Length: 220
Ligand SMILES: Nc1ncnc2c1ncn2[C@@H]1O[C@H](COP(=O)(O)OP(=O)(O)OP(=O)(O)O)[C@@H](O)[C@H]1O
Ligand SMILES: [Mg+2]
Image 1 (cartoon, helix red, strand yellow):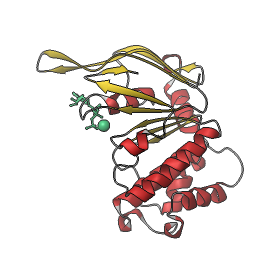
Image 2 (spheres, rainbow, N blue to C red; image 1 turned 135 degrees about the vertical axis):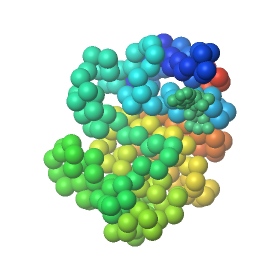
Image 3 (cartoon, rainbow, N blue to C red; image 1 turned 90 degrees about the vertical axis):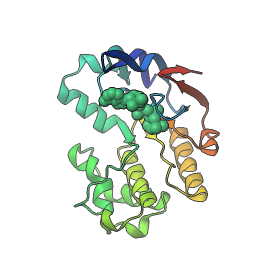
């Protein structure tokens, strides 16, 4: 298994009343599997993804990526694992304003060198996401959907074992969204596990496995 989560819960205090944003969620994703999570706004999808990505500590439960359990790792080890083996396309925008599009995509490679020149791969990912002509532009001059595609290319630059995507096609037109789903399917065929949250039925139909999140609980 690439990703294994066991009994994940996240409890928040809501004015003295306990509230579970995620409740006893278990999930396994194998190599090359394309899984999709749907569910209403506020049902806990992003909370779950943040926990699976090691960015948010659960109240209880364990997560392991490629056999390494997050609880057993130091902060530095977890950060290295996250940055080298996991690509995360966040729900908001996470592109750095003072770097060009190409520099943003190459950034993870600069921090966690893997050998080889990342520029060719970055340019090919920009081609695949349809923003190759924007390589030298700065984020402030890009549209929302173009910025989203920079995050998608950046999440794939390290050839991660797991790609997590939180509503990756939310601000894209139908045709561009379909290109991105083709890219995700191709990435999955090459062995990267994909876990995507979406409200888009067309995008969800590309997945091998569909889960529904309802009030913090995940069901198949
Ligand atoms: N830090 C926090 N403190 C308290 N409650 C929180 C916190 N973060 C999230 N929540 C609550 O947890 C619930 C789940 O939030 P989450 O962002 O996971 O939902 P979501 O399913 O991703 O929704 P959307 O589809 O709108 O993105 C929401 O009710 C939210 O208000
Ligand atoms: Mg969300």
